[in-house]
Length: 385
Image 1 (cartoon, rainbow, N blue to C red):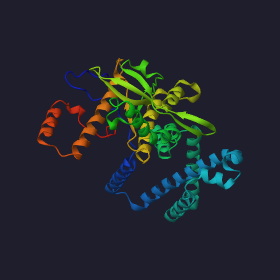
Image 2 (tube, helix red, strand yellow):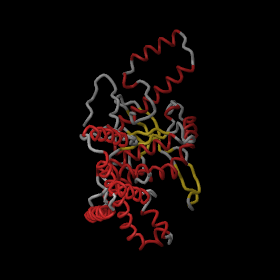
Image 3 (cartoon, rainbow, N blue to C red):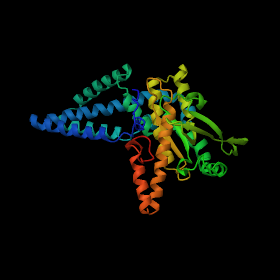
């Protein structure tokens, strides 16, 4: 959906919907349904012994299914003992049967069944039929986890592509350059006093387009973005490369009134990897998966940077979704909006630390009348949550 221009006021950018970590609602829903089923069973007035027999059979069937599934996987893992399990059969066994309670629970269910029925032959017949059904389900592949279950498992175990890219980006780049950024901006501001006067903009503004469309040349992406110069280089020995150079480019971003706003800005480079994966058949990475991973990359990177004391107040993440209809200066407007927010944050800090004289208070009131609601100081978070 394209954004309609707002005459007479500056529009806030459309905030992208970044998914938050899943909570325990699925477990709570299961408990609620469990209570409803128990209530329905009580209202039905079924005799206790037959009900207990049926529950025992169902529990035993589930444990048989888990044990048979593990046995089938073990038949494959035996051929990969050296390459996957360091030659240990017990290690392979533990990976195929992760919870240790399937066997004991099956034994308990069997004992309860015999106690209730008093007939071991019937128990054996039930076990054979349960095994037949479970093996048929496994052979036909009818018991596969849903897409939501797979997504939740990979997110909880931090095994998504996005998690790896976010951590690699932080450890291999941001953790190195961000602590040195303030010093580079200070050195530049000594020579160019009027360009970067607002200290709140002394950050690395990291662009996170959720469609992963990263332009190598920002000036070609938007004509209102103009390259100014490079900040002071950082040279380090890194991973066997001597004198590896890290640097940032300073740009002038022109607003709707053609006024320049100066800042260090660049794309989050790992998004190029996500885009390339979606274009390569070998990666089998769809456009929908790319969008999901891009959102997860943003969320993970935000969590990492928030927990990093050395990178505090040295960055600003700018996540956005490109409009369906092409807009010539969409990108520059997004960046300028965030720069304005930073200016307002600095004004709010200065006003809070210095008492106002009567004349200053009047100037502030006049200033507030000129600022639209969308431009009032906002939190540093850019995801809208």
